[in-house]
Image (cartoon, rainbow, N blue to C red; front, side, top):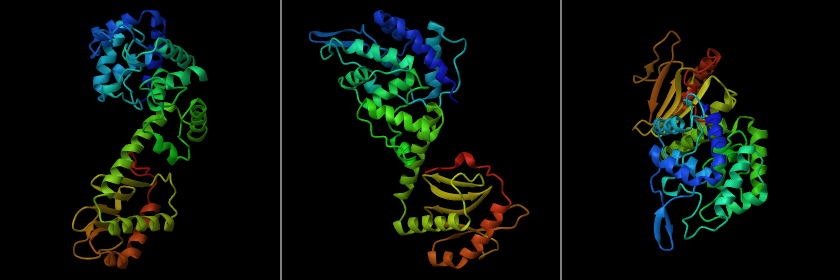
Amino acid sequence: MYTWVPFYKAIAKWILPYRKRQKELCLLLKKIGVGSNMMDKTKDGEKPLEVMDPFTFFAFFQKYSSIEDRKKWLQKLNNEIKVVNEIPDGYAGIPSAMSIALRYFANEKDRKKEDMGLLWDLAEQAVSGSLQESTFSKVLAMRGIRIAKLTQGLFWLNADEFYPIDAHKEYLTFHGINSKVENFNDYLKVLKEVKGILKKPFSQISHEAWIHSNNTNDFMKFKNQIESEIFDYYLNTLKEIVERCNISYDDERVVFSCKESGLNFLVGQRYCWGLNRSNNPFGIISNEAINTKSTPFADRQKAYFTRFRDIDEIEKVKSKAYKQIEIELKRTKTSGFKKNDNKY
């Protein structure tokens, strides 16, 4: 999944000797076909772009949200520069670039004389894995640069050493990490905490953060479409199940599935407690048929699933549900639906 990391690091090392050959990088982007909007605005008009930095160069390939599209253009790049024999298949965890804000430098009419040099200095430091506070701070102060964009670029060049502080903030907060970054020292502190607390490669953390963000969005979308009384009752009952059955955060037997269409709690292969937007929003498992609409599960271990609208009716059958959930937990080692688990 993360085989892109050494590939991107190889590109980063390849590009460093082009510091004084930036026009060649511009021409290469045009030749490959990713170089759109390759004009530089001056005080007198426009001219073809002749400056380039490593962060912007990488950004031209990250503007494609489709992995297949990105691989196609990276393949064309590798055909020209030949940094690897075969480009990798795994690109999980790479943050995309905004197509309307690819460049890390301003147009010539707004660009300071030292801007390009600072970007190249920071890129060289990123590749070596050792940033200097003065360079970092000066780049952060450049026009159009914010901490999210800056750390995203560092991550592209060296994902083993640097982490992107962007849409992942909620994920870091979820794990007790203060993601507020305003300066160089803040960033180093976050890097240290992420390494110490999560103990995984930054590329993997970035991918898990992206999944977490999507899951959070699904959860909130669904929540906003359900009456608060119904939603709160579902979650409170789910908490009762977790506490009663002593279910831990990383229990392999259970799945908390969250999609825009509904929430479901599963044990093993069976749906045990669900909520959707139908006229009968609640669905619950039981050890015996509750009414004529109770549907049996299709295997030897008898159990039933019944949909309800009224909370009072569910309260009457909770004991039957808890008995069956405990049975399911005892006979289960791991759920086959773990890929659908929503940590949020």
